[in-house]
Image (tube, rainbow, N blue to C red; front, side, top):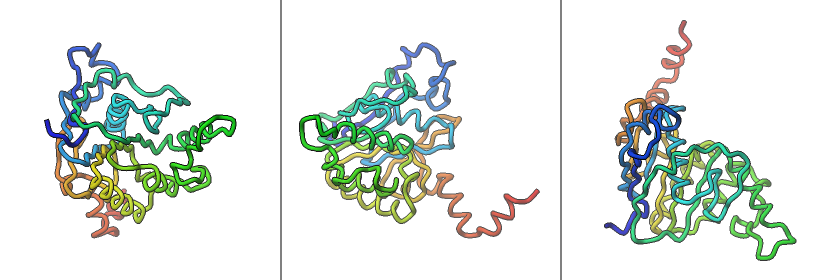
Length: 249
């Protein structure tokens, strides 16, 4: 077994699935899933809204021990029990090396992570303030993008597994480039990323493994073959033509 990446594959325990006719097992990507390998330090899941990529990513994160709404493995808060039972049917194959750090980022619930940090930093509780590990400034006192970059720069310590669900939702194109730079620093420090995204900027990470998720199941694709790259490229090359086409009766 190779020492890296830390998470080498996930397998669906198909013989234990109660029914492939009910959610989330009825999702085509899940219905056809047997094993998903992570052969690169950076793996992307891409697909249309509703394709199941976030459902699968969430299940992977929970199977790895992360809180369903995000945070580190030490976070146990919950504002709404909305995650699926898919994680119970995933078997993870791991390296003999154990990561020293980890975090599950969900753009839609990152606000709740900030609130939980403030709750844990109640002055009546013992121990040093948790916010010191996040730059020393409340995440609620920063914009969404600022707080996310603070998380990347201040909280993530390397030698970790980082699971992101659509991180570009908080970031401008320039900040997405900054995210790529920080990812490279962390990868060089023996870190692994598993990311669901729509961003053609993030998908350009060199050497990344990209899985396309759609009605046909899950398959590896090249960057230039993703719809995200092709549509963005076509639009930037001729925005007037594309706008004329989509506005035509």
